[in-house]
Amino acid sequence: MSFTRKRLIPPVILAACATLALGTTPAVAAKNDDLAKQLTKKVTLDGVNRHLIALQRIADANGGTRAASTDGHKKSAEYIAGKLEAAGFTVTRQEFPFTYNETLAESLTVDGAGVPVIAMEYTPSTPVGGITAQLAVVPADATPGCEASDYTGVTGKIVLVPRGACPFAQKQQAAADAGAIGALISNNEPGPLNGTLGTPADARIPTGGLSQADGQALATKDGATVQLELRTFQEARTSYNVIAETKTGRKDNVVMLGSHLDSVPAGPGINDNGTGSAALLETALQLGAKPKVNNAVRFGFWSAEEFGLVGSTYYVDSLSFEQQLDLALYLNFDMIGSPNAGYFAYDGDDSDHVGAGPGPYGSAQIEKTFVDYLTGRGVAVEGTDFTGRSDYGEFIAVGIPAGGLDTGAEVLKTPAQAAKWGGTAGIAFDPCYHQACDNLGNIDRVALDRNADGLAWALGVYATSTESVNGVAPGKPGKAAKKHSAHRLAATGDAAAA
Image (cartoon, rainbow, N blue to C red):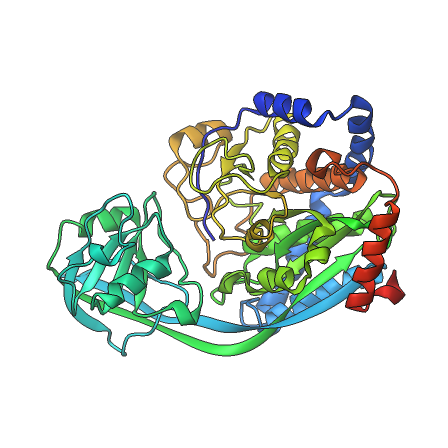
């Protein structure tokens, strides 16, 4: 998972545009605030932190990891499911297949000098001891390494190509087609590059990620002798999502919130993403299974996010089009307590003009809700691009408006950000990202408390009304909506629970 630093969002402009476009009345806004205020008071740091302690102890008792399909994940999922079942929620466990991937070895030497490298997820393995070849530096352009024409004279060589413009998988596929035997992809922003090739089927040649600084240094060494060793273990496995829903509220205009529960194999994943899961669980418990809400609320605790967003993608793809229409919006929380924290909200309106375009209609209004809440409490917020590297990916792909919060991962905090938020410039937002040290000592609890309150606030707002997002006013569903809902329940076998 990665995060893109972006410019400060102008909340005043966003507020004016959203109000003019949607005509939200002060009375509706005040009513939305009632539940939101109640929840932010009920959701405490102590409550969230208790769940983090539980996840740490589960990891400690199960090999130091909570990765999908491991006992650590299963016991984490049952901890979550058990709490929600005891509280009266309708809870389901959704099983799915995926390919487990674990790094066994990763090393790179260039002319005998070691260079840090990170094996990309699903990379093919080199032999034990690695492969040795000449380095071929691919010239940078607007679409570096994305076309076959970028690779000339690379047969039998290991290519170096900058990140950007197209997926990592596309770069290494084009390099493989041109005869390269390995690929190194350098970051286009400060910090290491921890990427994925998407699926095992997309992977062609051993591929690793480099930091921007190391990539720039190697770009001057075309023709150097390179030794690259990347070895991974891959296996077909199953895991499961935990889905919980309130028993009250409209079932044809559901507010959904999600976080991934799994860690990487290397560590316990207390920030990534115990923080999002703990805050989501505590908010669900404080909301209760039968709250006085207009819209039903659904919680998704995803598995196998770290293996390519597998669980959340499987969930969205399992829904019929009508069932997708029942989802008013999706809110995502992935890493909300980074130790060198920043404060980021997904850039739903693309006001920063960086990377991907805007999210589906309604995403801008969701962004505004988060920005207004945090800035109203004296916390400056920056936008972060919809990069597709967290569980909102498949939701926005099918047109469901989305938003969420995070505090940053492996990207380095800038001096301007350190001046604004505190912390240390030139250090990653989470120096323990995807490592064994992502434990209880790897949390900024002030940031976690603020973001947990932001989560609770947004849930309270949208459980009361999503009118600003999709035009659905509070109230009982009409006859047409009831008819569609009945068809949906019958089709999914949920009619008895309605």
